Image (cartoon, rainbow, N blue to C red):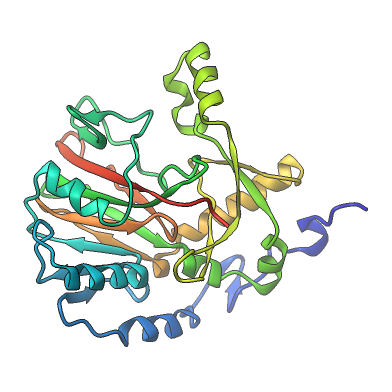
Length: 313
């Protein structure tokens, strides 16, 4: 039996809400229910200031280097609701940084990005006039792994006064905004994620072949289910996703391009301006992020630890 294609169903161009020529006008009303649910939460230990309706909140009233169990439990709850949390004035040592992250799970060592001297599980992003920022594409960290990241904890060491913000996109909202027809079409589809799209150019052919044996391309569902909240999430990204299994190449590319654009919707986003000693904790299962590369030739130095997650389902 011939597989049903998107062109047969017209799902690529299916409309959502009030649209004209592919442009959405007016509010995305489906966000309201999620916003009301999140805002109904109360916190005893934390000061919570939302940055956007469904994604991002600044957290005050805590010291990440000396965090009691009650405060940590509330951070865990806020993490699942807001998907990315920001903490200012947190002058953490490397040991305190990694200790906080380990409360969520084991940490990974990245095979392609530079680690901080003496700390294999700490990635150091040191940008300046010569080493420019190239993380300005929407992505989810290490989606090419069999068990991609649960989350990342990024702290600022040196930041420019202007520029260098990080943007986050709520991919749960992105999924919710798809048409019912497209949701049905995507329900059983998987896509391939491959490290070579981003890191392959750094390696000579022999080294690349060796790494491909170690980290072969993996298939993940295009729509994954969050293991803790049960929410559906759009899980493809322009940096690491190569193609959709079972679709002709042209059709796969067209559909992926359409799905990638869902991260670009401002109503699904929040934006954070870094100060020295700021910390961000984000849920790599539920958000994508984009590091604005608008500060050149100024310096921007950040350190990140990444928490190992589970296999998407």
